[in-house]
Length: 183
Image (cartoon, rainbow, N blue to C red; front, top):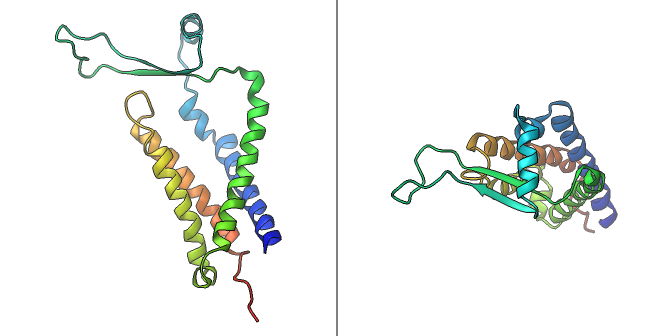
């Protein structure tokens, strides 16, 4: 069964990678949210480079009012400095690719340990993967909104894509994982 789990999990990784390349590479989903440009980008970049020298997330609040409060309706900005440049993109893509294959293998292994009743039902197996996508969406995407993070609509978009991604992986994996025969 281990060989089957790894093989089917790798297939799930191929599906997850293909879907992500399609949604982000062709339709530029994440780039349209995370890589918005401003007209004065290079001037802002020079100021940030001069003043933000350590990796981390930085929050920029408006000046306090005379009462010592933040003024209502004024934006809060966040800047993330990961501490690396474009030359590191290839290395990080390899790590990400490894995760894209490891996660479906682990999920397929978890499914293989499910009850015979679950393993005998295609919809239940798909639901198993959809539930994983829902957990990822709730605990990573839907909690990543608000002051210094994403607007709510973008967090919901990310959550929807993760849920759909894992449901698609489940559709493929569910067709190939069956309960073991007992004699």
